[in-house]
Length: 230
Image (cartoon, rainbow, N blue to C red; front, side, top):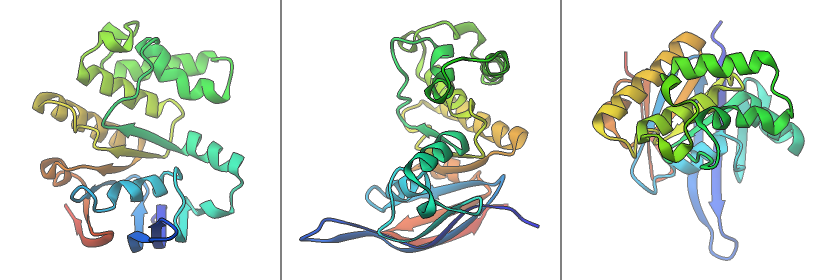
């Protein structure tokens, strides 16, 4: 039986009170666990709004969001924050590393948010991730002492520290050169295969999108294309 990581039913999002603007128009979407999916669309198409709703950073005006069978709307604020911190990892175009901390310290930060102490098992997991993403040589470097590609790989390792089931990546290669883009794409694919992590990647890069398992196109707040890429 296929496990469903994410299910969206009739998702609508409206901004404004006096003058209302609907940016998502009844989105229905189901994404299988362990799949690698891309969402493409022009600026202003609604794809980032959709990603924020999927990641529980924003609530839809109408509709239902289920993450691994849990209705997000039924969760209390505290439980929702816990779900977000433990089940979902975020990778953005801009890495948002804390400049006063090293690569290692940035990677363990999401764990520290909910736990004061770092047990040995988490330290070992962090070091395994550092090795996996190829950052051994710069693990003690401050964020601004690393290249753009290294900073993004640090952000990816940080997203994995709590062993999330889903990673949401918003333009993860948008600020990188061609070589770094290829390295980061391969890394995301390796994570998907090795850990069975479900990936939802928003990208403007059609070359990246065409190499995912499934490509979904959003235009004017609606899904206009949904292709299996095998």
